[in-house]
Structures are given as C-alpha cells and as structure tokens.
Image (cartoon, rainbow, N blue to C red; front, side, top):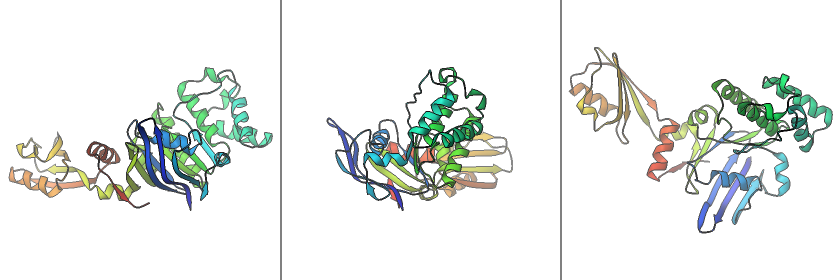
Length: 307
C-alpha cells in the first residue's frame, strides 16, 4: 500500500516554481530517502505533506485518501528548524506532547520514561530544556516526533550536528521504528546514512523528481566509479591515468582510482598494463550515493528506476 502519494503536485512562490508537478509514491513500511541540493524543493514538499503549506495544484494522498488536516494525526515530524520550550522540564515537555498526540497520562509517562532511558537521558528528566546541549535537544525532539508511534514519520535532517555515537543511536532507533511498521521519510544530505538506511529514494532538483528507485538498483544503474588495484611492486604514477581518472590515490603497492564518467575498469587496467605495471588484483566498487547525487545534480539529468 502507498503511505504517501503525490499526483502532479505543484507549488509556486511568485514567479518561482518550488515544486513542479511532482508524481511520487512512498510505500508503506519502508524508509524513503527524499534527497536534493539546497533550494531543490524538498522542504516545500515536506511542508505541504504536513499541511503547513497547501499545493497550488495536484493532490496529496495519505494511505490512499486525499490529505486533510486530520491526516497529520498519524504523522510524526522532526523539522529541520528545531525549537523547544526552554523553561519546561524535559519530562513535562515530553509528556505534554504525548498527551497532545492522544496518549493517556499513565501511558504517556510510561513512554516518556522508556524513551529517556533509550536515549541515555534519565537523569535529565527534571532539568529544564534550556540546560540541554544542542545534541541533547535534538534527542528530545526526536523523541517528541516518535513518542506516539506514528504511522508515518517525517525526519528532516535528523543527523545534523550529531556526534558519531548519537548518530548511531538515531540509526538504530529509526530501524527499530521501521520494524514496528512505521513509514519513514528521511530528508538528509548525508549520503552514507541514505545507503545504510533507505529502501528507496527520490532525488529532487529544481522542483522536479530527476531520479527515483530502490537504492541498490540506482547504484547498479550508475555502474562502478572506483577501482582498487594491487601491484606486484611499488605503485607509481602513470601519465596514462590523466584522461581516465578523476583522482588517483597511491600507497605502497595499492592504488585507488576514481574513474571519470564513461570510463570502464578494463580501460584503466589496460592503460596500467601498457605502462608496464604488473597488476596482481583489481576490484570495482559500486557508485556511491554521494557520487550519483553530485553527478545527477551537476548534469541536470536523471532517470527513474521504478516506484
């Protein structure tokens, strides 16, 4: 079933078209990456999904039904621009938002306790939120977005500013939430997180969907861009690499070559052999989401690999 559907959705601000007739289906129970450069239209699309903005044309559907204000009752939302009530105590704040989302008092307090324990923040329950560090505030806002176990969670740059330990904690909790059946829309510029978490992605550029599909299929369709090579002797620079590789990294008997668009692994191998280098092993790696993101945005091209 489709959790969120967009049919020819458009939003304009004066002469600027922020979202340009977007067609998109986000499947239920998956982690869906909503990607794009700054100013591409992601945040506008998210705000229309939340009912903060209304589309100028087109239809947004939630589990097959046209969007209404009541649709957001099934949502959890972590906005990119964070904000907490600074004078409220952490426990009171979480309980307040849990009650707003319809939880009874005892259930809310139970979930608040479990959430703070999962975040390693039990001792902060009776502290005011203004005393929290930026990372701690982000953890509290993450709990607010998830505490009522939403059917759809929209997370806008959830890893921004997190240290590696807390980024790992967020990843674990996102995966746990998915296991419970929540559909997660993840908007981020951190392509490593996309590769590790997302089932499918859509890349928006200049208000349009320029690429969409399953992460593995997208990576395969763009082929390998890096070639790791081992030599019988010391690796050395080769002039023959200049037209073939964007970057070359040599260390000991190993070389890492980032191939230019259209260049195949065999082209690099043949050039190195012609230059008298004895290859003992070479291995291709799939294009990273980072490489694909940069390539598609810079070229202005894209393609679709299914819904």
